[in-house]
Figure 1 (cartoon, rainbow, N blue to C red):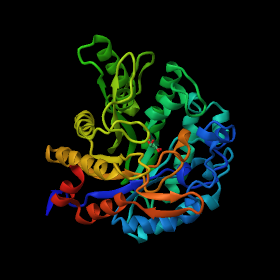
Figure 2 (cartoon, rainbow, N blue to C red):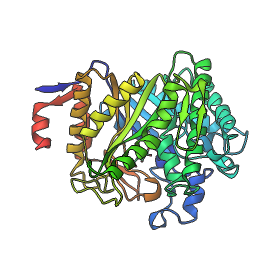
Figure 3 (cartoon, rainbow, N blue to C red):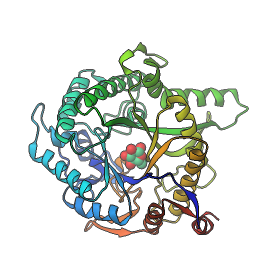
Length: 418
Ligand code: BGC
C-alpha cells in the first residue's frame, strides 16, 4: 500500500556533473590540479566514468530507474577550450545527449557551471576577477541559443557557496586560497554572474525556468547554551546559507566585509534548487558527529532536509527542486534508509504546503568525487573503474520502485526504516 504519495507530475531524477563522469576534460583547472598530485592518493579524473562516450548506457539506466528527469552539466572548458574559440563538435555531442533524453521522455535539467573552470579563465584569476562575469555570459548566451529548443530548466551555477568555501576559504579545491575576504569576493562575483545570466537566458528563451543549485547545510550549535557556539552557528549560517540567496530576494549583498546594493539581482530565481546532505554542529572545538555517518564522515540527519526546505521556501517563495541529496556508502548498507527517510521528510514538507516539484538523487553512478578522488561512492549504480561497467545496487532497485509508484509504500518503510 502506498503510504507516502507524491504530487502528480513530480519529477524523479538523478544528478551528475560533467567533470565527475565524462572523462578526459583536459582543459579545465581541475585537470591541471590533479596532474600536480593534489587529489587524495594522487588520483586523477582520467576517463572518470567515460560517460562522454557511454551516455546512452547511462540514459538506459535512467530509464530503468523509471525516472522522468535528469540533471547534468555542460563543461565550459569543452565547449570553449580556448578564449573565444567554441568547439562545435562538443556542442553537437551535448545536443545528441539532449535529443536522446527527449526521445526517452526524460526532462533535462542543465547546469551551466559545476565547479570547473576553463584553464584560460583560471589563469586570468578565475572568479576573483570580475571580468569572468562577461566571459561566463558569452558562454551562457552561446549554449542557451544552441539548446533553447531542447531545454526548459537551467541552473546557472552549482553551489556557489560550496565552491567559494572549498576553493577560497577551506583551500581544498583549486586555486586553494584561504581567505574569507576572497571567498566573499568570489560569492559576490557569482551572484552578479547568476543575476545577469538570468536575464540573458530569459531574453533568448523566455519560457524556460532559471534557477540555481544551492548547497544548504543545517547548522546547529554544539551546545545550545553556549553563547560562542550560537555565535559561530549564526556566522556559518549567514555566510554559507544566507548571503547569496538573500541577495536574490532583496537585491542587497550583505556580508561581513562586503556590502553592496545589486538591484538587478532581485527576483532572479524561477525556482530554487536545494542540495542537502547533512547537519553540522558548530562549536569552538569541532568534533566528528556522534550518530550515524556516511563513509565521508557526514552525519545522517534526515530531519534537516525538512527544516531546510521549509525555511528556504519561506525565504524565497519559489518552487523547490531537490537538485542533490545522497550519501557516500560504498557497501550500500545505509543508502536505502537514507533515501527513504529523506523522502519521507520531504513528503512531510509537501503536506505542510511547501511547493516541492522534484527530487534528484546524487548520484546516478559512482564518480570522481573531487579532492577525494574515487574514494567516496555516491552512486545508485556502482562503477567498476577498470572497465566502466555499471552495476545495480539495492538502492537503485528501491529508487526505481519509488519512481514507478510515485511514492513510498508502507512495506518499504517497514523494511528499511527500522
Ligand atoms: C557537489 C557534487 C559532489 C557532492 C558530494 C555537492 O556538493 O555538487 O559535485 O559530488 O556534493 O560531495
